[in-house]
Length: 164
Image 1 (tube, rainbow, N blue to C red):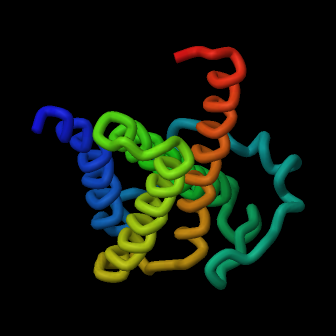
Image 2 (cartoon, rainbow, N blue to C red; image 1 turned 180 degrees about the vertical axis):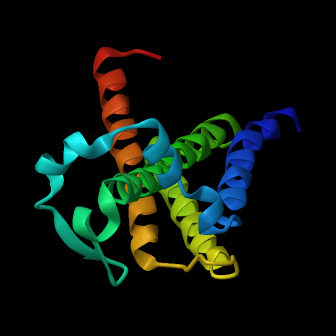
């Protein structure tokens, strides 16, 4: 029973993700903080040329303001980072509680992470002023894939140098 406590960290992290997804956008808006604490106008000449569409909205300094533009990348970067961490936590839990080989652990951890990303986006559909979007699942999966790649290379390094 004690070894299954290793699943507490990924479960708690999923709770953090769930809580964050249950908050309306307005409660997570960091633009007012950016506007009041930082002068980001120095970025404008460097990023003013960037313009693209994401979830049927224009992402550019002219459309969002420099604070909204920075917030967009903070929010999307959070998707990558949060699911990178979840993937690693699943992997560690599997190391501690299973006899799977390394590649199977990686695969199962990745699949669990992507499955939770899908459920998280579905859950967002029930939150005020939030919408589920497949592009966000792809960002989440990218975070998990980065973890897979780093864990794979870490394992290769350990094997090559016979580090336990």
